[in-house]
Image 1 (cartoon, rainbow, N blue to C red):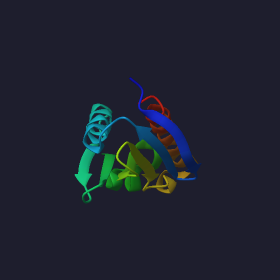
Image 2: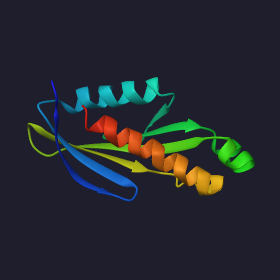
Image 3: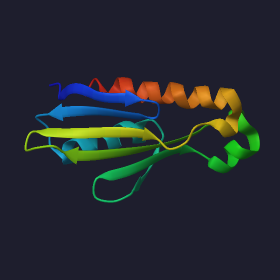
Image 4: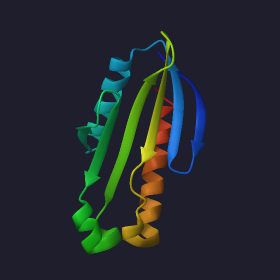
Length: 119
């Protein structure tokens, strides 16, 4: 069953979708499963916000684009009883990896956005 309703906004480093017919807990579980299966580690930021990281920031600074580093913040916000807003934001630009690093982060973000549309 598809829960995705529509993309509310997608600009620069932030992408927001609406979902219906699913609880916040279930949507959070789906996001956790996706990110953990993709090699990310999870850090809870609070009630409805989670940060996922992959790779090492230190290694990215040392070796540039030869070492990958991604960091995304996922936030869930109930709109009403049946609708949830999910936003994913880039929390790193990739600049420490130069133009290649920026493109790596952009490509990873695009991959995440396509997964969000298939939930």
